[in-house]
Length: 148
Image (cartoon, rainbow, N blue to C red; front, side, top):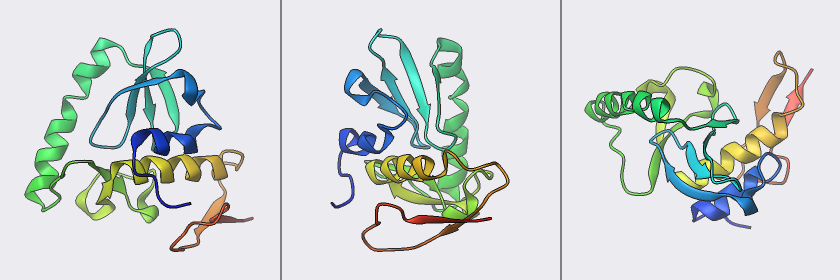
């Protein structure tokens, strides 16, 4: 199976965490977070970096205006978003700061898909676990290994 090419395909990698057949994607942000309506029509957000799903109230929409400042800063450093792209954290920088050294321009569907698969594979690990990435052209079902 090749990389996800649509947001709906990308969300398949979040089935372990969300009832994706019951959601309607509304929008995304520059960091790949997915804003959606759940079965109850409540507006929610999936933060793909933390794997957190939470309500998306109006005050949060206003706080995300700060993302435009981040975008401007990154664009002056050469990271200019194109259509269908988001800022992806490089594997060594997952859970670190959003700086140009830690980010790359990612295909939005591929990044959302990757982060869903990543979080599925680490969901049961303790916070202190060490993760080793295995790079492959076609990711195998379990592309991450852990060290104790």
